[in-house]
Length: 364
Image (cartoon, one colour):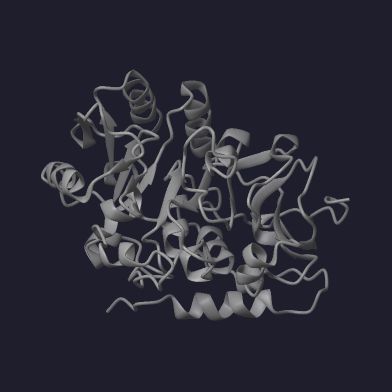
């Protein structure tokens, strides 16, 4: 019987995240347990009333060879902008669910708006159902996800969940570049660095710092350096694979080079508000070159459970799971959070055998 939590992996990652600050190779602490998801498990939902949504969905279907029967066009009402009412969403979800077959484990929605259903994100509402109770007090505790740190490699079969993610459509060229990075991530793992920043913004930084690793270790089998820094930002880095921080907005993203499949997010209240005039919006991460990000659409208050747990995210991503599996497994209370990116990105799905020694001066 499938365990509810991948306890062994959690314990092993807890061990390597608490080791002394030495340049040790921690490869033995990382398990290899690759994803079982493929294009046949993905449903692509696009808005027939939006030319950008249509074009980008066609590009994604071709890039990932999504079966034609998995592509579903819908007509979002023209007056819908950022938020859907629970009533309208219920009709939309029922329509989409009626067209999904049992092999579908992932739902990709190709649009930027709507990104919320009342106080819920549209990705959580699509996957978990609308949670009206959370909207009574958005700063209250959230509902525990059964998928948090789960061992499942087939979420619909095991837990009755279809994981969902948005591919934003503000820019057709940016969306296509995002898709290309996700596809490219599967071919090889570049030598990269995971950056964990402890900033002076205590309210946003402190909640996740307990899950940051000690500085200056490596994971040779994944060609990954781990850096935990007391800093407000990083600049001019060419090797960014992970970037976790806590601030209202992240500066100098344009100076960074994100590797294919890279993940970045900042713990703040309204990162999931995808309006172009929002300086906190998480689409700034994907526009700068990240392949995935996450943020909340309504005021969550600073519970770490409402944001990605870096320890859990890395444990599943480095094990070979996809971006959507790893990100969804990393959030304990995901009701208010929206996931964006290319869901099948999997830079660690192929195990690296006999890796070359890593350059210790890589981050100098």
